[in-house]
Length: 208
Image (cartoon, rainbow, N blue to C red; front, side):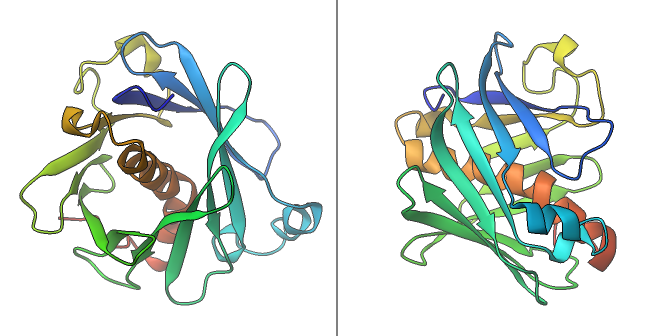
């Protein structure tokens, strides 16, 4: 899956469910290449019917087709004022993490590697689903997320719902699977985790 530079993430429609599942497609061909699915215990699933989802812990597993082998996981504990979301490889080792500022209106979402080095900052339009992953100095665009039809040269017919978006990674990162995992994981985290937080506490720093 990580040998590609463009992806389409498409949410599966479920009539009754309190967990999210996404199909990850090749951005050029539309071929299914993986899935991202929340994997939470029965107690947390039950509590979600009574307690706001955004403050509950969650775990999202990203698996690769055709054998559904685990590629990485996205994990977040209970939300208290500031949210730290971690990315772990298939062996459970920490790869990096994301941090958002509480009640901020600009520049509040950052990616760090496992050694606490600032890896990237995310800026853009949250509501318009058009934002960029930039190096800390702001000089290099490492990736981009967009919902605009054909904006990233992707298959237009894949955009059949409001919960479909494209992730494009800078070709210069073609041989850097760690960077790809962090960018793809951040895009998924924004949709599955931070989107839920924004509904309750405000948009965390993606308004510029």
